[in-house]
Image (cartoon, rainbow, N blue to C red; front, top):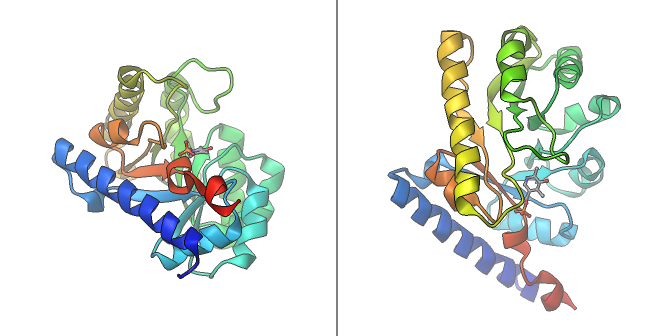
Length: 238
Ligand SMILES: *Cc1c(COP(=O)(O)O)cnc(C)c1O
């Protein structure tokens, strides 16, 4: 832990944890309720290893290929979270490598992941991605689609549906993000009430570098953070 990059990532992580704790205090929550998923995308694998040495175990990638490549390079107790759009033809190779998927964004994917999980003798904890902001680039169920399809998805026995996930719109307007996060929480509450004991739906995966504090105030249990952890990295390693 003596090379300069590690120290610098340690500072970023320390600052991030302070901000998470402060947002929790404002919301009357405890930091233990909020899981940090480090989104490692463009970060070099050595820096991911630094984060591991600093105690992080939950890492997220938005491309399956990145998980295929990185899993063998990191300790086996890393918990990989699949958080991005996922083609069904990549499910078979990815499934044995991951702990969970946040980005189940359509029914055929839910079916493919369930079938593959059963083939591997698993029941995969997953979150369903909801598209709450009109944005062509985003994936996910619309709230109405999810209301219609939710019971059928719960019938997929290879899945354990543990929560919902969303991405806020690309905006610097905090209140617009807040509306999306609150919308996800209300939809979660509604679905949870509708299915009673069939699914616990306890998790809300929402909040990234730009909006995680607002997401925590609105009930996020998983924040997916990349940029802030690696801020300044390029300048430092150049
Ligand atoms: C990249 C990404 C993140 C992390 O975003 P940052 O702004 O770098 O914190 C979170 N979730 C998803 C789905 C992503 O693709």
